[in-house]
Image: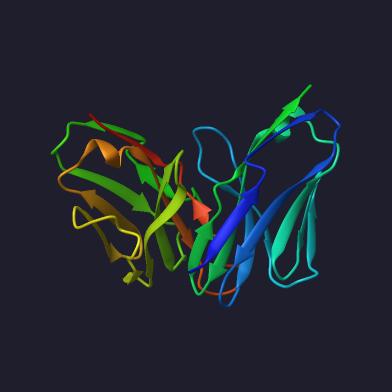
Length: 108
Length: 114
């Protein structure tokens, strides 16, 4: 059974304080690892897809990396508007399995 | 494209009543997913369809839940009879089977069963 574990469950940062969010996974036949952002009352919003170990992708202050067992979402100099829940998901066949998410709060 | 469209956005119903949630996927997408989100369990996959055919319904909690996809542009998730423990946010998502396979989510339906 595919499993995704995200840590920590919650993270509070000061504006400008860089950090990393972790996603550990076990899956048979990984087709892709996905990061989503979810704001309160809204559906998850797609951020990145990573397909193979060693791959990295960047978008503004976010950078996602992938190894054979885990993925990291690095947040550089975060701003209050980066506050959200960040979800990691793995895809095997067509099926997406999500972790429980990491709630990030960035204080001004 | 307007994205994945779900209706209603909010539903309050009494225990024992039938509830039907609706989803219109993004045009051209051929995979459709129904998820349920709660604080305790996070996002759980209930069922998914490829080319309108149900592929995996192992996440459907029990026989009270059923889902259909009569055509490529419409799907329903039905709960009959509803129970208070069904209260959650239900999301529909769609993706393509080829090329970029990321799933795009609707805004969700918040279901409250009293």
